[in-house]
Every structure is written in structure tokens, then in C-alpha cells.
Length: 142
Ligand code: THU
Image 1 (cartoon, rainbow, N blue to C red):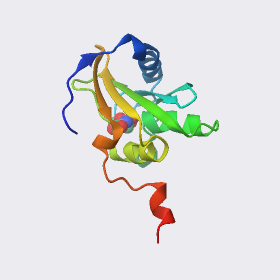
Image 2: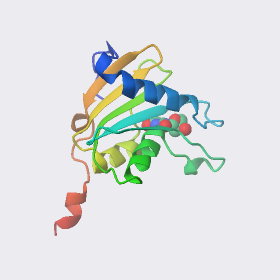
Image 3: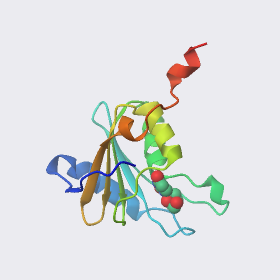
């Protein structure tokens, strides 16, 4: 991922960041020991949080970003405009490839923020970190 300049979480993003942090606290991650929290904003201004949910059958693990997005979609909100991911890491963790694919489906124009517990944050245009995505539009073309 292209390096971004770290900044401090601005006041505008405090609610999103706080929700991602709180979600991270309830992470179910007994196998990796890595707690991840995410929060998303949908086009109507609603916020949804999610944490990583691991499984003893490791491949059944779901990342925090996908949990947050699936919560929103399951409540009928399919347009994601902002994504925040919080880890206790420097630099903060970016979304994995599978999460990027899911963000491409519901938030292709989203702003992405990765942050850590020190409040350091890096921001990206999602399209810049996941160019040439496979999208619903491809299914419509012959
Ligand atoms: N994880 C996430 O929650 N989001 C990501 O984008 C990267 C990885 C989780 C999955 C697993 O529970 C732990 O972090 C270590 O990979």
C-alpha cells in the first residue's frame, strides 16, 4: 500500500474512531491474539462497528471490516462512504485483500482511514489502494 502521511485523528472522525476502538475491545481473537476493530459510515450517516471474529477452524475467521459491512448490509444499508480500521500497530494495519474486495462492492468511492491506539491515522482514497477492482459492473458485460 502506498505510504500515507500519518496524522492525528481529527475531531470530525472522532465518533468513527471511538466506535472502531470500542468494537476492537470485544474482538474474538483467541488464536491470533490480534484485536482489530472497524467502523463504517453509510451514505445516510449511520455508523456500524465490527471486530474480527476468529474460529477454531481458522479459515472461518471473519475480519473486522467485513463484520461491520455485513451488519450494515443486513440492515438494508448498502452504500459505505467511510471506513476506519483500528489496531494496536505502528504503522496501523490496512484492510486485507478479501476485505478490499468487499469494500469495492459496497464502498467503491469510500475514504479509508487506518489508525492505532495512539491515535495515529493514515488516510487513503479506497480506489487508490484497490485499483482495477472486479465489480458488479463486470457481471453485466458480455
Ligand atoms: N484481520 C482483520 O480483522 N482485518 C484485516 O483486514 C486483516 C486481518 C484479522 C483477522 C485475524 O483475526 C487477525 O486479524 C490476524 O490476521
